[in-house]
Length: 355
Image (cartoon, rainbow, N blue to C red; front, side, top):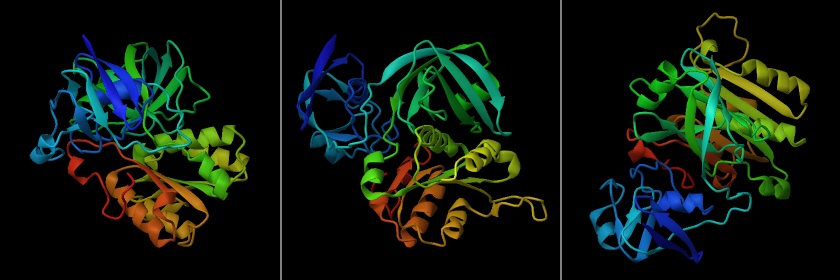
């Protein structure tokens, strides 16, 4: 059984299978609806039901209040249809979005490497190529869990038949625990994608002549790495700066690659900052938190750049504060956060609205 979903103000209608969420149906039709956690926890995907019947399913009572339910609101990421439905959603026009349809993919794990003591590199050779924009992510199916986990693609879109994922082991995490403890080369995996609106706003860079500033922390390096590799492969001649933070040298990965790229490309600058490197070590790079390294490198003046931030929520909030103090406006800052149940109530920075 299937139903018809009409999305206003676009006026587009898509078919929704029984049990399929509103968000999944829209994304698979190439229609972007705002979303973040995809688990009914944060409220980012809230839409108005204008006509028809829906089932709220696991929508959190904090993300969707009782009075909002009574007013016909629902969370697109968990709501399913009980009839043909018309919704109204806030859909922002994004000139740089390719609006690629989400599809299902199968592939074989071709390689696994220990990038750091807590991060594994996983390479998946796909049965057919995936089209994606640098900075987007996929949902990897976790066997036995009946669920998927989101991981950013760390490789460039120029290599669409094999993708690289950099996955940090989260203590107690079933998805990352499976990757680190059970997944082996040669195994078959299932995934879906691409997802996300974290990509380079190339039209704005062309119009305003701004340089590119990427700030990453930990496994948040995946998306910026894909973006940097894509820009350099395309022959971009504008200034590109990557500031990458880690606790210590053993947690710093792809360091040699970025050092080599900086030597090969005059317009690319790479800064690595270690926040917990022991005093007295022979580390010659920046020390301290990544936002402090950015402030020092640019002498607290970030004008003439657009910034792309990816990492833990606290790191992103600290970077936003630093960038705004350094004369960068909200319209010039783009972020990527993966939201879990633990931090769902802290999705948005009080200083920043466009998350």
